[in-house]
Image 1 (tube, rainbow, N blue to C red):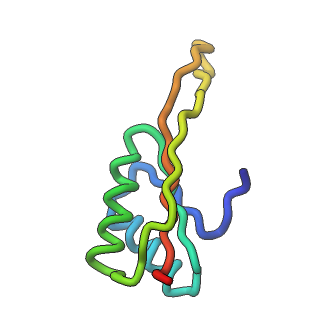
Image 2: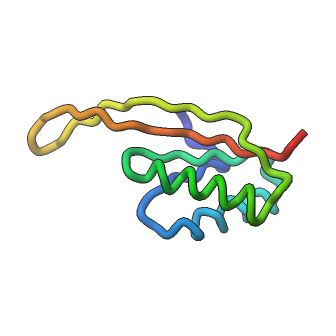
Length: 94
């Protein structure tokens, strides 16, 4: 699955960094922004989407949400663990 230029990978940074990235992409003409997160970062992705929608850009709506479970193999032990993932698609209201 190729990463597009409008995809934001949610990680360990503060939520407002990701909100600013969303707003910047929208201001630069992106029709859709995708927030991707795994594991504990899922709640941060949801916070980012909600803050962006409710506080800064009321014309932005959640277009789609995809949830999945990815199997991650530990390089050291070889154990396989299941990690939840989410993709939140934000776009301008029609």
